Amino acid sequence: MGHSHDHHGHHHHHHHIDPEAGDRQVAFAVAINLLLTVAQIIGGVVSGSIALIADAVHNFSDAISLVIAFFARKIARRPADARMTFGYGRAEMVAALVNYTTLIVISLYLAWEGIARLIDPPAIQGWTVVIVAGIALVIDLATALLTLRLSKESANIRAAFIHNLSDALGSLAVIVGGTLVILYDWRLVDPIITLMIAGYILYLAATEIGPVIRNLMLASPDGHDAEDLLEHIQEEEGVAAAHHLHLWQMTEHEAALQVHLVVSDPDWPAAMDIRNRVRAMLVAKGISHVTLEIERASEACPNAPLIGH
Image (cartoon, rainbow, N blue to C red; front, top):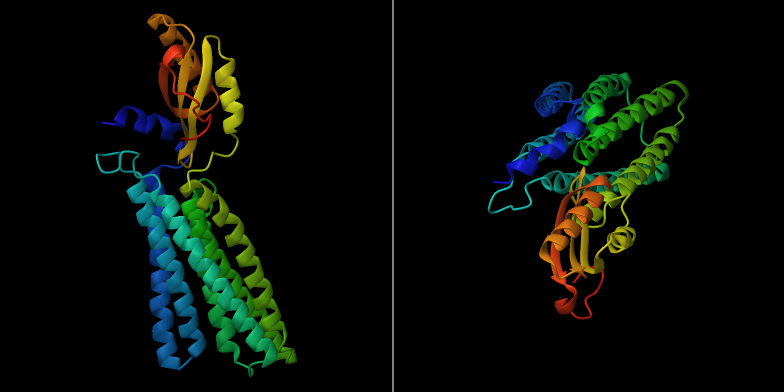
């Protein structure tokens, strides 16, 4: 059930990265982050450094965003069944939405912290904090690199990737700010860098969350215009009219369309020929799931809207 069309859509997208290999990379990234988190908590407790524990919390949030992404990938690959007739592909979009939302919250919190520190610059911390941030930066970059290739083709992994990137930037801020405070007592550098990073993360998350929300709202896929496709359908020979058109994104890389075709010719073989031509035209335009309902001109839906119901 559903297997025939379930797989043809995937080959040409993932030919350069095998899903299982991708899963291994994400799992490895999770493991690195969790190990670092545990190490930092132990170090923080032993040395009494709040900075270490704070950084551990950051890395833990990265690990969680990667865990969410990992399970979403697994779920998304399940074939369609009676409960989820469209398949599970949307799981990745739901995960991306969750991860971007938490990222927006984190960046707003960072901005708040930055402003608080502008008003009341903190006391000088020692080199320990800077060294910790250096170690964290290395791990964050390693994690980001593990998910870099996957992030280019998956909104889900991109959300987790930006989580890690934001953390790497945070570590960078601590290194630069901390060093300058220790050497020159420039206390405003740290909050200023923090604010800049918070702004940048907020910008990234806000621009990336848009397409995810559109996808969940069943918006028309990018690069396809519903009115334009409707025109092409109506221009096909033998099509008297078309209405009730729905165009949406099935998965991140597959578009779907359904429409009622009104056929001017009452002769059934001719109607089938028209249907096949319209389907071929739409598939050639990159729409993989096409559902057409055929009506005779004499008994078509009266005053039907062209798009939607």
